[in-house]
Image (cartoon, rainbow, N blue to C red; front, side, top):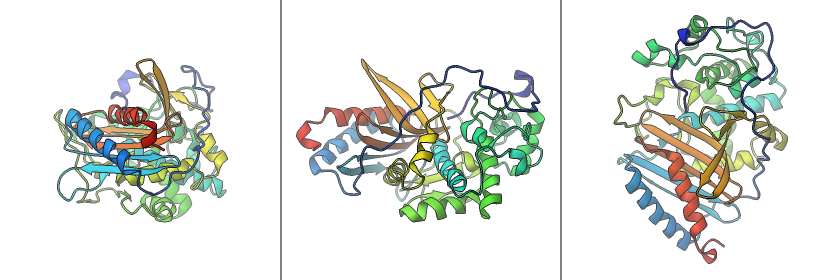
Amino acid sequence: MAAPPVVAEDYKPVSCAARQDYQGQPLHAAIDPTLAGTIPDAPLPPAVAADLDRSFAAMRNAAKPEAMGIAVGRIGEGMWSHSEGPMGKQRLWWASAGKTFVAVVVLQLVEEGKLSLDDRASRWIKDVPNGDSVTVRDLLAHSSGLFSANEDLRVHARPHYLAPDETLAILRRHGAMFCPGANWRYSNSGYDLLAVIVGAVDGRPLAEAIEARIVRPLGLSSVMAVRPGQAVPDVAPPVTAKGAATDFSIVGAGGPIVGTPADMVRFWSALLGGKLLRPATVTGMFERLYPMFDPGTFYGLGAMVLEVGDGGRQDLWLGHAGGAPGANAMLAYSPTDRAIVAVALTGDAPAAAVANGVFKALRQMPADKVR
């Protein structure tokens, strides 16, 4: 997900000697993210799978994507997944939903005592605007005040991978939008800076750290952290009717993950189940939740909380959304529905609407099918 593009003339750059108290819209109350049980890595009952297959067909017909994949993990019951797309394109790009992988690596380094959430960006990277007051926590939470370099008008005109030096040059040219901690605004550049910090602290590039720390330990055979400029031929390419589609190989740390929906459910199950981070660290990801640009959406440390209304029903999702020209993704754990749903598609349809349809289909199943 990304905010509307801005240019330096849209705001007065600020220089800050210290972090400031938060001055934005009210925060969401902290959320307990504990997964209420385990999700067996076994198929859901055939009757449930058949209903979900029918729901997939109906939603694909409505969304009309070039490719779409959905996976469901139900606590205490099992998993189902289904994907359809171009021949040989089995994996999908998860756009900004991949930020959670970056956050997990950073938080693992914090747990290992190699990094602190209160470390200043200037400890690791020179010439970051307000770098002596921007913290690692700010970069994770998008409370740094840093401009998002992908919104630069020159970059918009000629999209390409932004190496760290170019990103820093753009950030310096635009200046900070607000003092660290004072407000919230999405910044993909914050995650690109986190990639630099991971490389310095962990001694290997972000993609290698993700694969060594998350992908291989969990056996996520379909998941890959894409290196800048890397060709990944078996991924369904983004497609849009609204201009140029995104080349995900240039996105960097703001959206580095490709994989199947089933493996993304496994990742979130492991994260919320305490298999990647200590329970207290996972709780901390959902402790301070900033209001985002869309009503009912809130941001923690590499994770989102979404308030979802459906008629008279109000639900809460924990996860992360992703969106870019030609691709849309949603990862959501619904404590009420005791399920994790992963949706990714190519095209212009909203993945959140598809995810909501999946949760609704699960709720409408007769009790004897889901027990």
